[in-house]
Amino acid sequence: MEIWTKISKDEADEITDVVKAAHCAFWCEPETKTIRNTPVKAILMMQLRSDGLLGFPGGVVDVGETVLECLKRELREEMALDNARFPVGEDNWVCAHLRQTEQLDGSFKNTQLSHFFSKKLDKEVFYEIEKRQLEAEHWGYEIFGLIRAPVLEITTGSVAQKYPGRGFGWFLTQSFIHCAREQMAEMIIYEGILTKDEIDRYFEMSQNPELREKLINSSCLTENKTRK
Ligand SMILES: O=c1[nH]cnc2c1ncn2[C@@H]1O[C@H](COP(=O)(O)OP(=O)(O)O)[C@@H](O)[C@H]1O
Image (tube, rainbow, N blue to C red; front, side, top):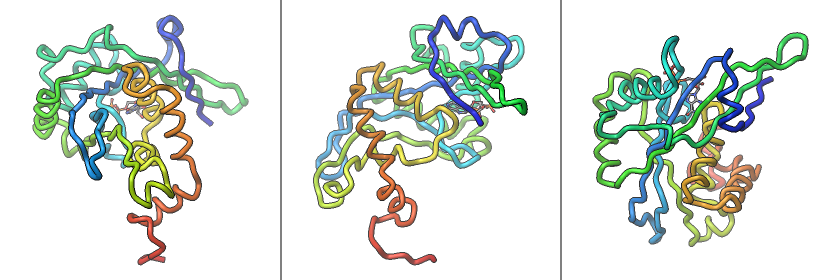
C-alpha cells in the first residue's frame, strides 16, 4: 500500500534520504467560450504519458541536481521549453507530497517526495509553448499527447442536469499518475482559479459511482452498448 500526504515546505526541506521529483503546471486564462456558450475559466497544460495516465511535465531529480535544475532539464526534454524565456523558480512553488510505502513488516517508509510548481502564461505564449512541444526530444517517446485540462462547467442541457460536473468534474474521472490530481487541485486553489469549495464539489461529482460507470462504458452516456 502507498499513501500520499501533502506536507509543508519546511517539512519537505527536512527530508533528504528519498527520491525527489518535480513537476509543473503551465496555465492560462484563454478568455474564450466552449460549447453552449460556456466560459473557459482556465486551461492547464498536461500530458498523456506513455503508460496511459495523465500527468504534468517534469521528472525525477538526478544525482547532483537541485529540484529546480531537474525541472529545467525535464521541461526542456519534454516540452522543448526555452527556460531562459520562461523561468520557473522558487516563487512558482505550490506544494509538496510525500509518498510512504508499506514494507513487509507493516511499517511505512518514505519513498518519494514530489514538489509541484505552477506558472501562469499569457494565452498567446501558452499556445506557442504548446506547439513547440511537438519538437521536444521526448515527444512521441515518453509523451504521447498534449492535454488541456478544462477548468469549466457546462451547466445547460439535460445531460448536465442529470450528471452535473460536465467539464472539469468529468475530467477528474480520468486516470492520473500518482498525486497529479491532488497537485492539480492544490494549484487551482493556490492560483485563485476556483475556491476549495468549488474543487470539493467537482471531486464529489467525479466520484459518483453511477456517473463513473456511465463514462467508462459509454462515450455518449446512452444505454447503447456496442461491446459486451
Ligand atoms: O504529474 C505528476 N505528478 C506527480 N507525480 C508524477 C507526475 N508525473 C510523474 N510522476 C511520478 O514522478 C516520478 C517521475 O516520473 P516521470 O515519468 O515524470 O519522470 P522521468 O522523466 O524522470 O521518468 C515517477 O514516480 C512518476 O510516477
